[in-house]
Image (cartoon, rainbow, N blue to C red; front, top):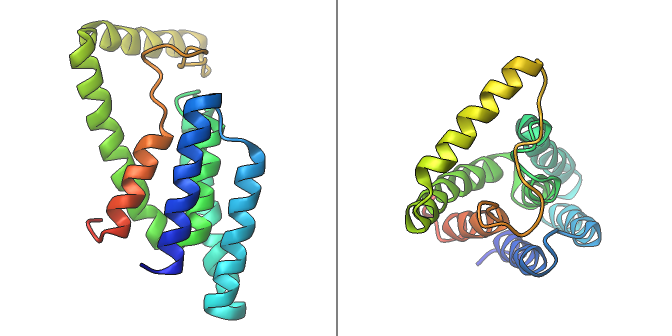
Length: 169
């Protein structure tokens, strides 16, 4: 296992633990991950690691910002993706994000089917789109608190990074 994949697994696993117990990913963990990613890229690539690192950090921030604006994805999840990008680079984070979103969709669908509220959630989603259209601006999608429909997206991120580390992405 490379240093990069080991660090990505370590920081994503730590984020899962804090997200499940505290319902957030602390900024201290994010800053530590960003610093570790910068050091890792500096050690592996020297000065050439700076653009590699910065590209990996800013790519998920830019791509996922609309999901944050519509409150479909939490800031902690997006910042964790930025940490993963700093560690894995822009190519690696694109693969990791792809895996994470596919796994998130599969887990969400399985969860909704097992809870028996698939129809209710689709109705909620279409109602949300209608409200956004009427108000001409984004409104929060997610409900706050530890409710069953809130998926801790750090879990699919960790699983996606695991698939990436194993060479499946």
